[in-house]
Length: 336
Image (tube, rainbow, N blue to C red; front, side):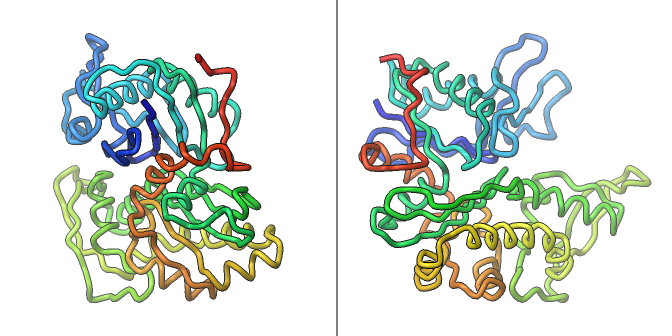
């Protein structure tokens, strides 16, 4: 069996054989601290966040695109793979998507998590490469293609040509960072503490980066910092833009640096063909138009930004012999 894993900070998406995406769940696990047993994973664990009693720990074991808790990540992957397969599986081949500039220590943690499922062969693929494959971009041609993959923990930016990565950068400014900036802004301005889920809801419903309006607002509820009692405020699109502006500028500057490191001929291709936006962050309201206006290059969302990387992982099994860079089989961890 061939299993593909997009191990994201916010979600873990699993593909199986040629079926494509078979499971898409939050990267969350809940366990009982008294019995040290897993209580729930994925959506069920996510629903417990901020609502569970003290002896139930609700944990995000993947932070900033990398594993922060090896044991819980292994348990999360095992449980979700079994859920996707419908039964325990024997020695699957696994491909895992990883950020472009992953360190050896971070790579080892991901490989340990994969091999804990009993896999016989482990491959790693860089997320931007998988995103382009998933979007059906012809990366085997001598033409430059650029992708900006804005996930939950990292934003990966890469230029690809002839099945290889020409230039790439990764920055830990992405969906979760946006949520934290919104929480910080509301706390500083209104002295109201928001929950993470509330901040994410505001981000998805109210955001308009291109043309924010002061009269378009949303009621935001939380806890008053001084009194400790429930409180609420009206947050406008302009205020949300102010909260996110610095983070978006960081991503834009990273895109510019990648373009500076790219040969002029390929930059010309990118100007002609545009920049592909993938990941959950690509769904931010007005982002396409904002980046197009700022960079002077047409930017467009992938058809399905959330599952684009996972779709590319599934297709990568059939293209592993021709991919020149950003895809590797880790021999030291092969078990057959």
